[in-house]
Amino acid sequence: MAEFMVVVADPDSGETHQFDVEGQDANRFLGRDLGDEVDGGAVGLDGFTLELTGGSDKAGRPMHPEVPGSNLKEILSEGGIGYAPSRDGERKRVTVRGRQVSEETVQINAKVVEGGDVAAALGEDDDEEEADE
Image (tube, rainbow, N blue to C red; front, side, top):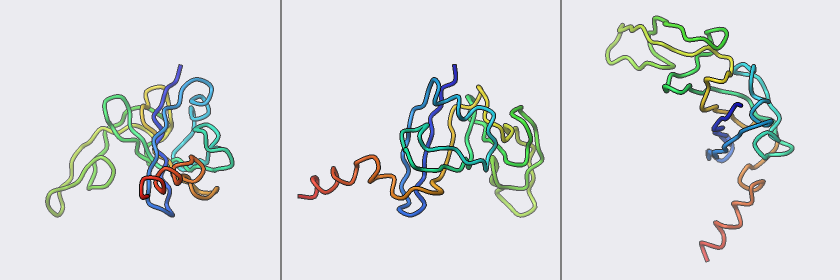
């Protein structure tokens, strides 16, 4: 049975929210590629649309949008996802996971495309106002 941690970013406020998803809701993510849109109901955000932007597997290897499928692949990288060069022109062979969500995926990163304010939908705004008083 699939189990993921979904990290949802709200581009309007700059905040992120983490959700543990398992069972039938987690199955909604299986087989999806980076860039695909998913219904937010899978993480408890009814009425929201989420776009998959990244993720990582059990060993911490990042998902790469240019690698098809869900298998591991070694790529020669000049920087970007999975590698940050320390000087100009430096390249390195890095192992990355493909762009498709699979059972090996542990974390999925997503951003809100439609739906409004995530904190308001989760009821977190009320807690912050009470703490200020």
